[in-house]
Length: 379
Image (tube, rainbow, N blue to C red):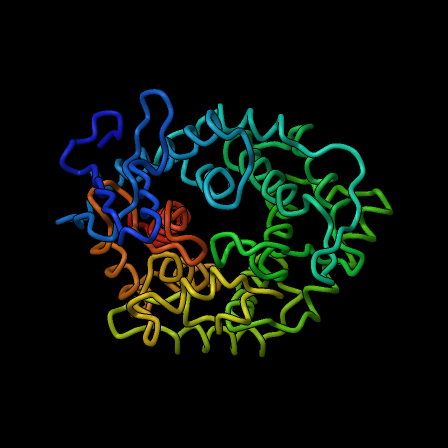
């Protein structure tokens, strides 16, 4: 189903009601999650109906949602981010054999957005980071994935993006996350640094053919940091499985086994996993804003978090990357959860753990769900 001909009945409008006379009126909820020209993607809502059956038509709706969301963002915002264009270009190219070629307008925006010039450390509340590091990571990763799955060869712009990314690592070798945008994306340093590793590995022949001594030294420092880093939370611990997939020499068999055991223990009775099970609120980031803490604490299921599509999909991806067969009961239960939780718009709804307005985590979750299902031969 195309959002350009989206049935009016599925566009959920929230009426803005007046509060008590002595208080200001409530801020209106957005009508659209993405909007540009003839693209009008309705706002993400928990009450949106679920699909009656997961099939080719609902897969097509998910593809349309991902394509429209990324294209709208490029046209209206023109910036690389961790919640829309970043996940689009990091996940969509691998789905090309199943969904068709990704949008080249998004690719062009990434090429134009490759950071240039020197970058230096900044400080926020005593916490030091390199400005622009996370944008550089997403830029390099998206271009590397395009080269791997669409071009089939390394492009000059991807080579440049990877170099600019490496130049923006912190002195200890990591890529420091200095925001809490759409938990868990770019929330922990380990997760962000792992995305950088993925970019290096994805780019065809780049890492194997690298001869620059400075870049090699920086890569060596990054690998050492990843191997020895203390996990901030259980999310970092299970991500050892992904690190083992991309750079097996950095994870011991014992650590890999422990991570897989932990991930398995986190599965819910309904077959899904919950992102909020992976960390205490205060352990997601070096400094959690009061707004985010209150939002997470105020969710109806705060005491006993329900399964969500992002962590369910990621858990499946981590197990498949660890050579667990798709027929494994844990994966099959997760697949069934995903199939029955897709919404009629093609999305997988998820409440933002960062802001309760646009729920961009829904976009991230949809990209991850499609990846998980593809890895299991379900698309």
